[in-house]
Image (tube, rainbow, N blue to C red):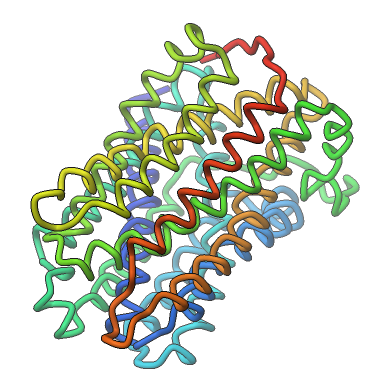
Length: 409
């Protein structure tokens, strides 16, 4: 792959995840501070990610794979997204804001698959080349958080009070516009199937892989993946509002420790796979969720701030050891015939169904423990996902039979 193309793909990934990290992390804090949204309303806003994940396969399967070049659709979606982000920037009421974010996520979630398609189409050996390009996406997410906390200080108490967090949407609107225009300059990625090829809903959603659930081990893993997304939703929805409310300085910047950790543990994953095997690796990922939330429950913004930072830093184990391990396990179990369908099914089950349920539960519990002084009883709130993750850990440990799975880089 030429260096010029590698630069294009890396810049594409950087902007793709800069956009997501530039508003999604602080969304809960913005909605609570700027729009006086309830926990249920915040859950509604975060749930748009799940609806986007459910709708994305239809946009990819019915349009991107059949009629237009991937880079052109990517450009159109991001230009439309820039307009919607600008509308969110100007919204002053949740009822006005929600339709914009709903449509935005319906358009944004398909772009995650499109950037991968554009990248893979230029690579002779994706197993060796993709990680070096994809890592710039994580860098983009980190840079967005650092800009919010350490350049513009939009998440400081004074800025939150002044409503400055709405500027994240303006920043992302600009970035989305840049990526929209830049996408038309990316290498051509033509449709993968002809217009005459038959397309089925079951194929687009990965439902062809449902027959894999006849395997008891895969069924246990599948159900565990859905259930572990419930505590995951608590982190996405509540972590930034929690850190902001208890007085942690530069909360968004500090949360980038999680993405740095993600890169580190991604590099360590082959070692854990080889030494401890799949079951122990994925159990470590599950247990890390419980430990993280206990640290959140009993840490504070004073002498025990280190507990919160450790909890954030556990993100690499929480995410990589469970979700990346799960993708590898799914790929192995599916075989060549059902590889794409199985990955699509897991994505639909986790980011679609699992997190949709998780956001709803997180919203209900967060509202339940809102005190009369308009602050939350975070100690109790975090014990719920900690306990839930522990239950999933125990069920998986007792019912999943160990299998030898090879990690293929």
